[in-house]
Image (cartoon, rainbow, N blue to C red; front, side):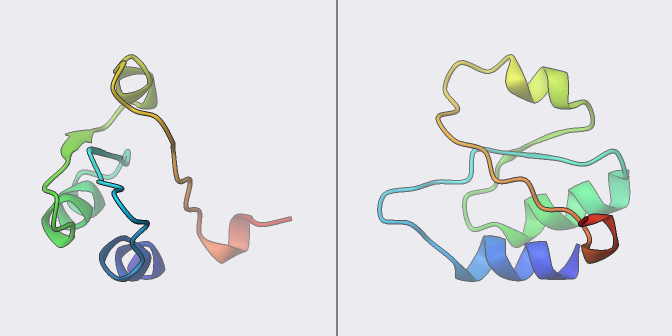
Length: 68
């Protein structure tokens, strides 16, 4: 989560906004929402996030130990 927060706050694409964040862990979700300058909506269930029609791209960040 620490690396995601660094990316979410430091890395910006021209014109891009963070409109939503999703995490099953409520504490991590709260930190991600608070860390973003855009104050995105928070979701615990990815299906609820995917139902939004205004999202044009998704960044999926996973911990290094899950990379194969």
